[in-house]
Length: 389
Ligand code: NAP
Image (cartoon, protein in one colour):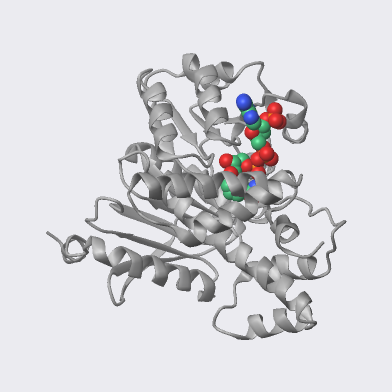
């Protein structure tokens, strides 16, 4: 066994949290123009992952220089890449037909990145066909049915709203699936739904990968999403290869969390329950600041200087402190989807026999905001549920 592999196999499950924390820190602090990091562990929930940082959003290059860095709990292979346009073009010679089902806030920019940067043929379908207009304008073909998309595409991506929607779409698409075709569902769903979709696709001979994403509208537009994949490893490798121009055109990092379908869904829900809880707490702090007659700008400034500075505070904070009860928060991440994720995370914890008091309480705040009519606003509208209005 080579040295690197030996290190991987000594990596235990108990190290996973440390590693995730380390990686989050790396995201925040890494300033290299473009680096690709690969690693893996023997943990059943995190068998292996590869990821690509792409701070400058430039295209990948086949040129790599590898070096190993040792951290507290894991060894990581770090690959730096050149990022010139000519490198990008040389890596995008093969033209494939890619399918896309869905045309919402996330699907449209993701599909546009595949089309514009990946140089693929793109065939698209959405329940409401007119939502595909920006894609058709950019050169995509509009299909009449989801089945037609899968029939014509080598790999089909899906990005729709809820577990119900993703099951419905899989059932509409399944007759277009045949041997070895790829089906990558990026919607945020629970593990049971992911498994049902996987069964639908694999029963037709297709390969299934769940690939929910961390990142919102702007990261989707800028090709900076983080893919949390599980399922078919061969499909993951195929679409994550440098010259595939698929995951790396839509995202900056791709984790392969194992062949067991559900790992991606679970990781995504864990990440989003953390995000939703932080946002709910942030909203409470803004409301408390108002009650205490303190400057909300001072609050943002203090937070930005300390150890709990979170990019989300900088992105959402100014709009939140400037808002009042009449404000409609333009959606990047619709509040109804955040509440769905909190609900599914609480459900996951329930199934695993774990208490989740912080996320469960935050979930109640999002439910309140939904009841008050803020479904289609950004999840920052949870502020309406906590401030005196
Ligand atoms: P969105 O803008 O609300 O779009 C939802 C999409 O789902 C639309 O294409 C919609 O089609 C389709 N859809 C809904 N119900 C359907 C059904 N029964 N059958 C077929 N299609 C259906 O949502 P989004 O913000 O792009 O989010 C999509 C997914 O990504 C969600 O799971 C969300 O949790 C997740 N996500 C979102 C963000 C974000 O920041 N927005 C970030 C990460 C992950 P119509 O046009 O016909 O309604």
